[in-house]
Structures are given as structure tokens and as C-alpha cells.
Image (cartoon, rainbow, N blue to C red; front, side, top):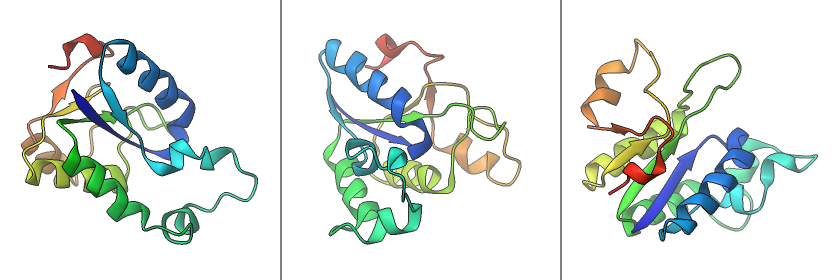
Length: 136
């Protein structure tokens, strides 16, 4: 299965490990370009610049990867003391995946965000609780 990973770039190290695990399970993995180029570890990292000024439009590029995939995996870990963090960009990607009827999985339970709780739950997400073998 071709799986597109969506995440905060803050999770780059964790996502690379998950990508390796998915490949060992026989999946093809599509990663965000920011993870591929290890943007978060660059000393002059600027999130907006990384999305606009690297010779590509990172948001549209990742939407293309979602559209090409068979499923989407949301990597939601703790960030800035927010458990199971899903940022604005990842939320946008979840909506895009939903529009294209892509099965969507999260590594961890959904976050408790009152302002978008209904929307996240409406995306019909399967929570893996860390078990990548549940992706079907």
C-alpha cells in the first residue's frame, strides 16, 4: 500500500523511524519534503520559508502526494505539552484526504481540540494506538 505521512516537521526524527517500519511491513511511504530534507534540523529553519521558497510549493506538493496515496497516516505526538498534537497544516491535510476518500489513520488517539473536535471526528479516522500492523 502507498501511504502518505502527514505530520508536524517537529516530529521528523519519529517520522523517519515510522517510515522505516512501514517499509519493513511492505508499504511504500510518501513523506513531506520537509522531513526528506530534514528541514527542522537546519540552523536557519523558517517554517513559512520552507513551505514557499525552496523551488516548490510544499503544501500543494504534499496534497499531490495525498491524492496519489492509498491511505494517509497522521503522526500525532506530544508537541509543546500538547498531547497527540495535530497542527493546522496537518488538519488541512486530513480534510484533503477526507475529500479524496483516503483511509486516514493516526498513530495516537485524536487530540481534544474543542474548536475542531467535530471536524476531526467527522473524518472517520482509525486510531492505531502505535500499532502500524493495523493499517489495511
